[in-house]
Amino acid sequence: MSTHASFPDLKGKVALVTGIGQTGSDGNVWGDEPRVWGNGAATARLLALNGVKVFGCDIDVVSAKNTQQRIQALGGAVEVAEADVTKSGDVKWLVQEALKAFGRIDILVNNVGRSEPGCPATMEEHIW
Image (cartoon, rainbow, N blue to C red; front, side):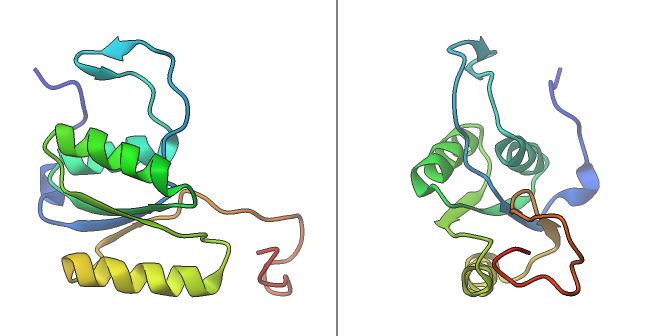
């Protein structure tokens, strides 16, 4: 019996997931894997377990690679890169790398970023 949600219509899709890195561990395991997954890592894991090819990024590439290894150990297809999504140049580069790796992007998960109170239409990029 599976311990995750099943979305068969996602098989073969490609997802770009920001904030894929995982930080922290409680030292416990769930089945044969660590129990702790951050939001981006958990999203990437669920997508991969449903046949989605995942291209993920994190500002901490070591953390991203840790998530990559965990997902690959479960049989998922995942590539990762280091990127700071608060910088438009990094975001443009990230999209190009995802397209190089998998040829397309079907799903976009904007899991991270930073902002301050204000109007998005008038915010400077470094705040948005």
